Length: 387
Image (tube, rainbow, N blue to C red):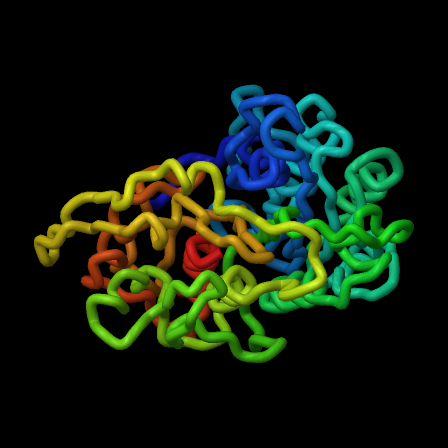
């Protein structure tokens, strides 16, 4: 649904995404710890990769393609932004508000690495997180100099260039698939100490963009329409229509969309061996009902029922995997001119589970081909569901 007013800054929501972590081993990304670390399950700081779109359209206003004002760097007193605020300035303000707040995001609660499409701000090493060296943007515990370096990177962000968003997904995935070692993202103290490489350490990718990618995909085609046996034996897809319908929400006809990368990074073990310990299914998944009915699809009268395993509210993975979040910084992220039949959920921050979500579950609607650029902001929502 179109947003009729400028967006409000939601500091806690960004903090929740960035700190998927204030939870012990085995808990879900946004399930904040219910007891002190170490009292029930061992607390393990997760790996968080922050990827930022600094393409030219990030200089536009939130609601249109007119140039934004460089002088607007903070929201109004009520938390809303003026119509002519730059998208990149809203992104920078949001990150600085969260990462400067050590009560909201305390030292040592997460480990972070970062990357940006073009590195127009010329920050050290920032264009590609996928390096075997310990660079300034490599995975480290969030504290001291690493927090300072990240905030310096954010301050320097500047918008220019095209939008090859797939690079951010393929590089994040490749970084977490590197061989285990002292400089790997899985090291107990990256750059200093390698083992133990904890199998219960969770990993998150947060992609921040205004929406549309507009250059050729790169990094090899992934495909979320192919039948696949997952590491726990569950089959994605299957031979019967009933089996395929269970996971139809995640499937599309195009290979190598952002959603395909998000699914690949979740479904294919990042580190198949060499890790100490194992990961259990997320706490809220273990407590969830066997099925959930999201409502009746008015176009075909079917109930939108999902098995717990295929419900995007939960994460059943028990293998080393990457969970993807997307955060949109324009109305393109919630309205899709080239896909007028897709209606965004009523709740936007974060997205809810009505309108076209129901249609996608029952199969009355399919994800459109992303060949038209006007549709591609829809890939942000699709990737968040698939990841």
